[in-house]
Image (cartoon, rainbow, N blue to C red):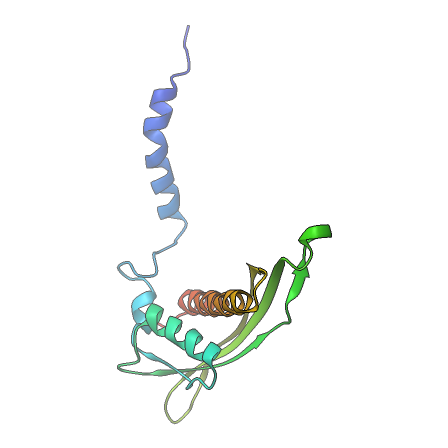
Length: 165
């Protein structure tokens, strides 16, 4: 009579997962042969005009590196939606959400200024309101900063997925 041995399955499972991932053609963006190196230090974003754009560009440069040998130009347009109040009864107006959208275009710098990629990323963040105006303002500004980080991370993810070789 044979019995099922869970220990053998648990020992073999990590190996099966590695073999399965290797067979799907997926490569780590920053691993050997990955697309992360193709854009590192080579993307120059348009100059920011607002505080939100400064936060967005700072996060882009944190993820892609400062533009030392810029070969690509990233133009972007950021829009944010109005706060949406959530809650019911006594909790009304205690929670808010801010929606944001980043439209971007990656172009090769040079004579042809050829478009490499175009896309759009949307995100939202929430924050809690309190009883003081100063705390509310600080919470709203923090939420907007977090939104810019999320939008920039989304753009970087899309750029790395379609990075030129």
